[in-house]
Image 1 (cartoon, rainbow, N blue to C red):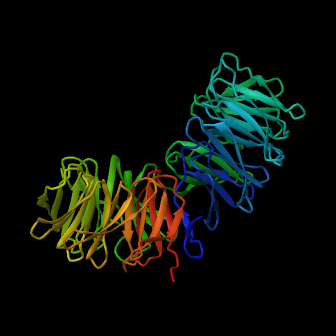
Image 2: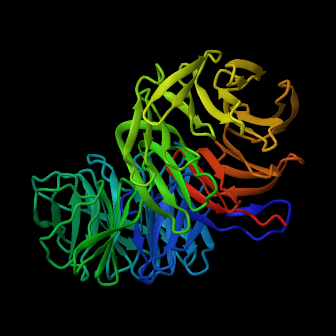
Length: 593
C-alpha cells in the first residue's frame, strides 16, 4: 500500500508521515503494550513505535477517520470515518498484531462520532453523528450488530461520546449536549435500555468521559470547563468542579497542581503504563511526551495545521527540505523526520519558497504581496520586498548565480528582482499573463525561464532581453511546469488532468498523456537524469512515470487530502509529497534496476 509497483514485482517502499489529525478528540492513543502510539491522519490510521519511530499504516477507509479506539488488551483496533450525508459510514475492525482488516461494519450514516470496546472485547459500541444519532452494539467475535437504538431523547441534544464500563461488558455510557445516559444490554432479547442521569439544574455539553475502575462512578468533562461526577448505580450527579478550563480529553491521575503550557488546545491525553508518561495531542498537530515525575514536556511530533503549499530541497542535499503553509515556513531533517526550524509570520500565508543556490537564504512568496528572505540556520529575517506584487505573490524562483529572483503574482505579472549584498530592486516587469502565476522554473544558464498560469498559458521568457520567446496555450488552468534536465522539452499539467510534453524551441506539442482519472494535477517534478518524473493531485495518488514510455511505473497510496506539491530529492533517495490536509509524506524512492 505504500509506494507499490503496478507493472513490476518490486519491493514496496517505506513511507514516513509527519503529521497528526489534531482536531479529533481523543485521537492519540498509547497502546497497552507501552511500545506504540496510534493516531489518525486523514483516511489512514498510523501506528508508531515509540523507540524507533517506525510507522505502520492501516489503509481501508474511503474518507477521513473521525475516531479510533484500542481494546483494553490491545488485541483489536477499531476506527470510524466520515462520509457524505445519507451514505453509510464504515467502522473498520483491525487486528493489531497482524495489522489486517478483520471486518467492515456499516450501519451508521454520515459519521461515526465515537467507539468503545467492552472490557473483555465481547462488544464494540458505536455512536453515530448528529445526522444519524444512533448507538449500535456489535458482537466482536461474530462481526455483526446485536442491536441499536436512538442515542438521545427527543428533548435533549445529540450524544457525542460513548464510554464503556470498566468491569461489565453489558454496560456503557453515552453523553453529549444536555444528555448523559447509562445503557444496559439485554443480549437474550437483543435490546439496549437507557436510563437518563439527573444533573439537577446543571446543563452542560459533555465533551469527554472516563469510567472509574470499580464502575461505581464515572466522570465527564464539559465545554464549560468543569468535571461532573455521576453515580452509576442511582444515576445521580454527586459532585462537580473546578470551573476554570474547557476539557476535550480526560484521564484520572494522582492529584497534582503543577501545569505546563503546550501549543494549541489539548485534544488528546493518553497514559503510558500506569501514568509515568503521558502523551498529549493538540489541535495544532503537535504530540508531546510528558514525564510525570519531572513534569517536563518534550515535543516528539509536529506538523503544519493548514494546507502545505510548497516543498523544496536545497541544492545537492537530501537531508534537509523546507515546506510552507499558513503562518509559517518549516525546515525538516529527513533522516530523523524532525523539525529543525520554524519561521512564523502570523496570519499570513506563504504560497511558495526556494533556497538560494549558495544556501545563504530561503526566499518566500506571501499573500500580503511581499517577498521575504530568511537565514536558513536561524530563521532570522534578512530582507523584505514590500509591494512586490499588487495582489498575492503566488510563485517564486531564484537564478543559479543568486543575483536575481523571479516572482509571479495573483494579477498575472512576472517580475524580475536584482538582488545585491544590501540592495534589492525591481529589474523588469513582464505583463503577458492575465491570471495568477502558479509555477516558475529557470533554465540552468539563467537566460530563460518558463511560467505557468491559471489563464491557460505557459510562457517561455528570454530573461536577458525580457521578451516572450514562446507561448503554450491549452484549455486548462496550468498548475505546474518543469524543464527536462536537457532543457529541450518542458512538461506541463493542470486542471484538465493531462500531462503535456512541449518543444522549448517552438512551443509545439509533442505528446499528451492522461495523468489522472479524476481531479487536477497540482504538482510535478522530474529526476536529475530525466528518466522519470512524479505527479500528484486531487486524486490523492503519487505517481511515478517513465519519461520516454509515458507510462506509470509506481503508485503511492497514502494521502487523504489533495496533493499540492511534490519533489524528488537530490540523489533520488526520497520523494516528498505535501497536501491540503497538512500532511507531509516521505516515500523511499523505488529501486528501478
